[in-house]
Image 1 (tube, helix red, strand yellow):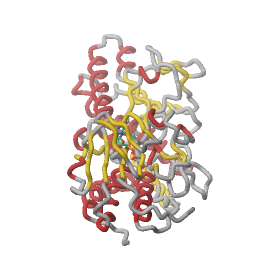
Image 2: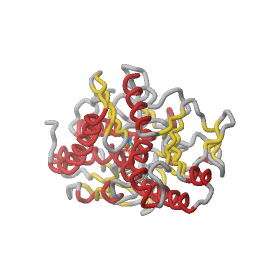
Image 3: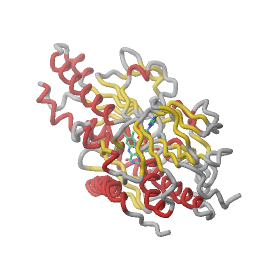
Image 4: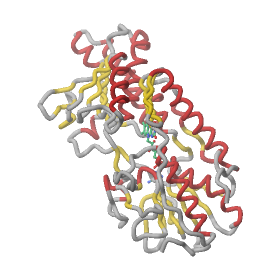
Length: 405
Ligand SMILES: Cc1cc2nc3c(=O)[nH]c(=O)nc-3n(C[C@H](O)[C@H](O)[C@H](O)COP(=O)(O)OP(=O)(O)OC[C@H]3O[C@@H](n4cnc5c(N)ncnc54)[C@H](O)[C@@H]3O)c2cc1C
């Protein structure tokens, strides 16, 4: 049945105030003007929304952690009830979200709980490597780098000093490239503050596959590789980590990658509470959805963002965990909830790819937009513009709905 005739089917609860969930709440607020009886609740463990795309800057010390935490209450209209609580599970049969503050009943649920780092069960990785998945994580990375540089300055043995002053980033996707570039640009500038020569800190990027930024155009990969090399990032491809040990990352070929700080940016998987919840799990534990973004066999539950396993019908591939995808899915979910309230047909989700932009260091970047690859300063400016536009949109969506009807 493509058309829904649910009408007012009870409270709408959005679980997660990240890119997808926040956008569902913001877009729905205006649409609910004609349905004052419908309760809209947004639940998150934090009272702030995190601009995760800016974390590499926090991890590189160029942005304060608080600058990437936007207070949720500043963005929501009073129409939306915000509940700050940890979500611990779902009672699917009873249609209740189980939170630290007690159950919250739903008529329609939107699951938008994001993802968590995937350590691919590599022994020692979760214990020995830092991750970059929250503003606090990013602060920890920057603090660990600072301490490693101090320790390196105090080391008498040059070999030991070199090792301590090396940051090893695992995973050559966009997050790994952005972090490696940011640190490689910043560390020579801050080295003297720690009593080290500018050329002493080093950054190593370790990637299991044959290229960094896998899946991107060869031109983009080439430009990014050259910029990283210019920044003196040592990129090691075809280097699969077998274990993280006290000494460093042990590769499958037996080589040891030594360093003073290890960060893992090698991929994500669905949040733990989705596993075993009874929801249909797809690739990396993400929730399988139909073309309207409803969980399979659970038409009252929508899923959006990293947590949703959405196949692009044009390519047959599952869409990547990206903010851009999460925002578009959030918009479709908001429209479909509105359609249900108005007894209108649901809209199938279509992804409109706006392009791919990655910063490489503090001044340069690479971008693939409409089949054209750009690099250098322009690509970095594009990244800045996207982040600025995102912040503007969340501040202004409060009372604005660009999609009529
Ligand atoms: C370092 C980094 C850089 C990135 N850079 C880019 C980029 O440049 N471009 C791009 O397109 N994408 C980028 N991404 C990916 C992008 O950030 C994600 O795809 C996006 O955040 C997904 O949105 P989401 O709403 O699914 O999840 P999130 O934004 O992660 O939101 C999930 C929300 O759920 C809440 N939550 C989770 N579990 C619970 C619980 N149990 N109880 C209560 N609340 C809970 C969290 O607090 C959070 O607010 C980057 C990601 C990272 C980590």
